[in-house]
Length: 414
Image (tube, rainbow, N blue to C red; front, side, top):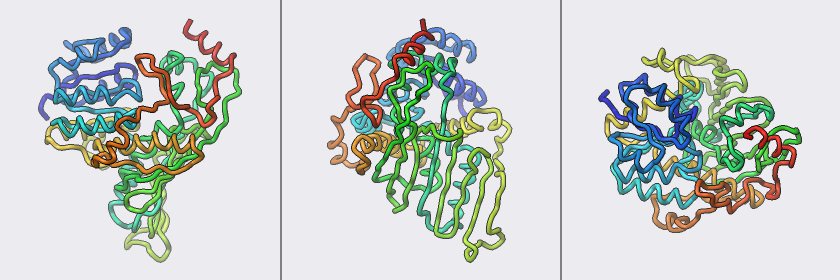
């Protein structure tokens, strides 16, 4: 692999984790950009060498580099991705690709004018159990895929002060305003990858259960989960969550076809259960198999050293390979899939706010769909320039933290 020069925008914990993973490849982290200088210095020390540091993005992208990894705020990737593509820099973008529908249009239009490779840095499809589900789906033994589930369930301890210090460290931080449909790629990405399907219509409902614990909180989201249903381009149906907070922590996926189904076992990662109808068992298979899949990958030892169960290594390997070969990544990591996922997140929340009514997912390859959304900038987040949200972030629009919760939250940072 040639010496690929990488810049990282956003050097908090996620940026550092990816920087550590990049050091396993024959590429060079040449520049870092971050507004918080203490975080910038910490990551620069980790990377070592002559890495350049910046606090201004426009100066950062003048640096000589082949690609930029975007690990800045969750909902603000699109404007920076566009600036990269205008300079011919390849883009590796974490989580949702665009925070508004208009940004989705702008992102696609910029991409189609550029020579840049764009990859959604969604890593959960590369977890070992999800890779096994992909393999079984591609074998065809499940028959026609009819239905799939994806749950990213991540309840948090309300008294975890260190998490708040590291992850939502000011009152208007995006984590205090993120609707339950928005953090969607960890649930949707794996089932899109395994089945090859893309959502075309979405509806969603939320479960409102605000915390009554007198613990530090500045969250304006009282929903614990959103259940999202999509009708897909192949006729199948997905039932997915965004980032949910019900029951125990788990990442759970299930894919059902006309002949059988495969799922990982909630709370027992990475075990999977593969089941066939008794009259449709493939030759040499069992009706029911419960097993732990193998990597069967030449980079297995490096994979096991990396974050998210090794998925960070494989996701970066795909991106670097695309740069080497000069090709765009496959579905669902390509830009059109990325914007489709973001559209499910954004329009799913609108469905929540409007009683579960369905919304069609636009195809921004089509100019008529672009025109429909090119001025749609509705957002539940505060922007970095201080602009206030213009839609509610919760199914109960008047929800807010209690005075005591907010007082305890503010005490952390005094």
